[in-house]
Length: 271
Image (cartoon, rainbow, N blue to C red):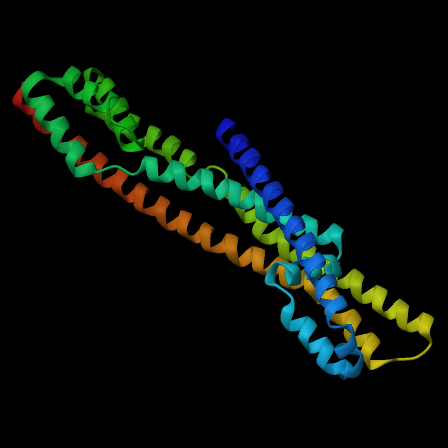
């Protein structure tokens, strides 16, 4: 939990820094634009209005366009969608670090344990597990620690602790799934509210203007677009985590069977 909190703080700091940079760039761009407008005022008065608007659109940078769409979509709903993205990415970073640290070369670990077991006994094999990281080494240690109670207890310990390690690997995935579902829902809700506001504007105007209807619908659909983008980004990470966890669990099961066979042979050898 401390790691997740640290990641959230770092993410918020980076977001604040990026916002400050965007604001500074916006101020500089506004100053440059004002100066350019003053210099080009005589020429602009003679140019057609369509050409001026096209030049303004082409001169608009990407972050300015995103900022404008963010404001048009509604600060409340867009902020909620962005919050889902930030929290989801923070959890994704934590899971990436945890799962990468949980990956182990099981063949190399089994070779070390077998060598220690045959040369120095169970205690040396337990020491190898203590000095190794990852869920596989933890499962091996629990099994070796109950060797004196019999092979049946070893198998039960390996199975039970394997379930515990699987739960740790799947930790926080439910939160990512929540943000994947919540972001589009917030987007759809913002779209519905935007559509209601658009029809209210039509009612107040007393006339169905194509420009009014199209503008209102366009603004309403921005939140849905943002929610779907956030969901797609988090869905990619979620599928990666599921695949990674399946791979680690398969290695855990194969290695557990190999450990049981190794201890069975060791038991027969020392009888």
